[in-house]
Length: 486
Image (tube, rainbow, N blue to C red; front, side, top):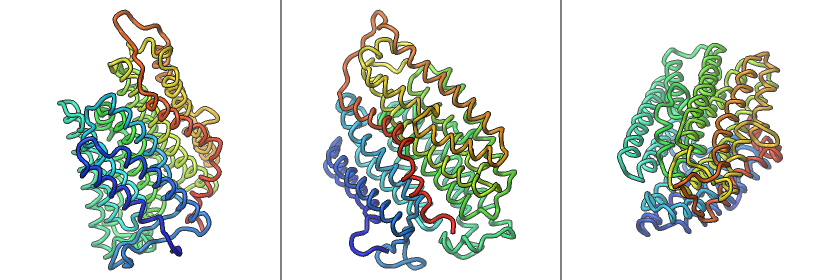
């Protein structure tokens, strides 16, 4: 606990408050309120990160009633890193969304209140201290994300939202069944209570619980072959929504997989299970990249790129399981750095794609001619985000892949090196596919109109942050170490 003001609960209360006020203000209102509140939330997340580095991990008893009678919030370095990512992405995207919906009003009416709920659910999920409260925040997050997918209306977005709803309900249902099995076995849902009780001799019900919970979360993360819902949902939503979903929402379920795998279920994990998850990650990298190369729609290319990039996240598990401690540390650092770099870069890429679509009036890669000349900053942003996704220096993507490569070599798992190198080349192929078309002259009958400057600047800020992450990653690693190890 800390004396005086505690930022931890306010990171949940504040987005709930501005989301509710945006609803009360009426359709399409609340943009300035959201931007101001997100700026405050960013400062709160930075304050919390500083307190964690100085004082270590800590808990907060909601209402003064701690578990088991009340609800505890818990923040360590991993939670602090994810809270920083959430605010750092949501703030520039809020600025972007205000300009985007001024140019393209479709979907604006309910964007701000639903986004407030989504950000509150994300922040609450990262600091939840028991598996049932995690389920509650997962449900709130999933419902908010589904609502955002459908806000533009029309057959395709609503169909994509319903498919997403089915996937998120299946994932949450599997997770909840696992929670019930844990509670039936140990009589508790607290992570702190459960962790020392689960060992290598745990009952079969606990092993089944672990399998159900992790499988449900992988479905929500859209790991191959559970990715069927992601491309239509991310590719068909308005650009600010696509950016939020790809940058943040799928990171929430990935965060939970990391938390459960490395902490709660660590005594149960096996090398075979870790290699299987790694194989699914490798398949995602190859399959998602190949499908991205075949796309004719710009946003669908970026959506399938997300399927591919998710695969890198799951290489963490074979590289951090039953390996020397140095390799495990490098794998965790690389996986988290990849989540951060991908979050910033993919938000920038979707935002840049949205700007190109507004400028050309169509979502067609083959008709991007003239964008390079008319929207140089937007195209540069797309390319800069691509540098991070390819893993080129000095980006955060390079730092992440370097750490993962180091873990692969230290643990003797050289085959993951080949996967990462091949993935980088495939990423370059689909990024340059877009850049090549954009540098062609404007085709007869087409036009490229100016877009609001705020669309270009906010997207560029995200892409630049992904690059700077590679140059300033040491404080992030210091924060990540809080609460881990001895």
